[in-house]
Image 1 (tube, rainbow, N blue to C red):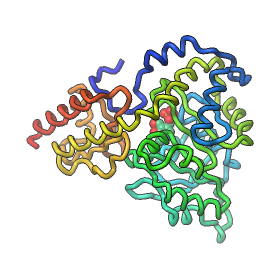
Image 2: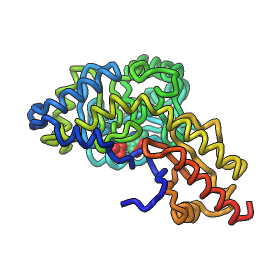
Image 3: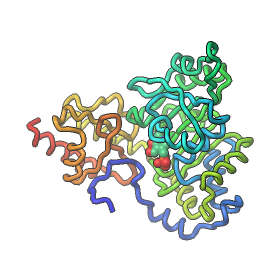
Image 4: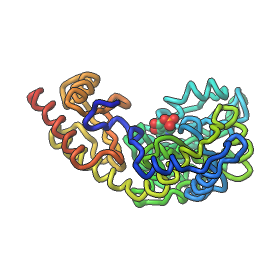
Length: 351
Ligand SMILES: Cc1ncc(COP(=O)(O)O)c(C=O)c1O
């Protein structure tokens, strides 16, 4: 049990609501290995519909959904997947992809904004005409971009990247773990974003508030192979309707309230920036994440995390900065408690 009064480590820490617990207890279930679970099947239909794709596969984690998505397009070891450095698939999951599918990457540093533009996509996908050795099977993108503080990749830039990939004959997989956070900024809905890619995964277990589960969505003709890979990776989780029942509520209710998390993240960011000038790039705060530069605190990053924990506030780090994520279980009081902790820390250091 987390001892934090306010847990801002991630939007994955939320507890299922009473309605979710009831739905889980009462869920109609079957054996998902045989495609027999009616609640899983309904969730898969609704998820595919929510992002405008024909089919989807419900799996335990975002990592598994990404890995199935990558593997679907990847012809095999010896070929490459192209992507920006610092994405979830090219950092945390880099060993997973190597171990499960023999995937290696061609990466490019996208700079602080976190996503590649058309020019960088063209560079990444440039054919290896001289040596004629490197073959790229897939381009992978992420939206929102977690490593860049949850920023939204603008749709025009995604479209321009899409055109470059199309011209190169390379499909696109989107890690849309937080695609509904991108949609909640009001720029484009999830289906508009997903229309620019071939496959998209999103997590029910992050901002949407489900306890467990992610989905990989794509065209109907990939569904059979996606199911085969789901079984291969150990994701045929039998009476998974129990968790799919919570997923249905998350999909229905979650997207409607994400703007509240974004407003609280902004409030949190502005409060920290006021206490510690120069510590937060407010332009980066577009969704539910706040990154804080600890140089302004005058305390090493890990010590800052420990001090905040001692004050009851859970945070993590990413790319050398403190990361705080707002979510369903953070209310206005939670934000106030977190801001008090930052103020206490700042005054301890004479800031
Ligand atoms: C952008 C992104 N993609 C994928 C994942 C993987 O999801 P999971 O932790 O469910 O495997 C995460 C998890 O934090 C993430 O932030």
